[in-house]
Image (tube, rainbow, N blue to C red):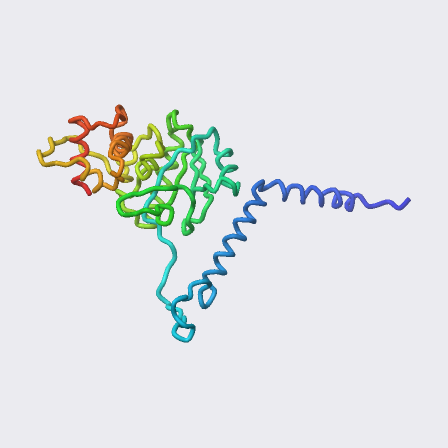
Length: 276
């Protein structure tokens, strides 16, 4: 029987171990490949000349042409929308976001332990906002970044998580020049459907320059002050005024989220309204 040298034995043993290690280093290799394929598909669409399916059907072919301008860019996010996952782990949220059937995603997940997972390129549109409205914006997915906080909605947000969120916001706000007032919550843009991020320390963020907060000294609003107009100017969808009031109070009052504005609530609203 032919003897195989020890060095070759070791090499033969290492080969399957190498492939096993390579396969086990990234358990999301399969879905990452799908992501890359989809991104390449979008790249092919963008580089097609003339653009695919963008001809003007109501004009004859000899009356239209395409000349590529050198002055253009890609999507620039102008809002950051903060969510809570309503789940028990970052891993569970990742699994939900890599399943086609959920049709849901976000740009970032911030774990309870402070670890940040990016799931969609900042320049791409993620499916996190759903049916929403803020000011005159009806398609928030197209102009925002979505950040999911690993939280079931009824627990405190950990110090590590908040520190990482602030670090992430610092980077994104500077990178894309996002206005301070445009860092808001899912419940702000979808008051009839959403409550997230529930029980969130918005003042802590505002103190660091992320989102607005009311002043320590408040004034009684003038007699002509109209809360519905003030809410609309801030950005809330007031087509369902009680829902807008609850969303406003969920963000800025928190101790009372009934759909009625108290005198104290009106003072807070008046103060914030003057900042917009």
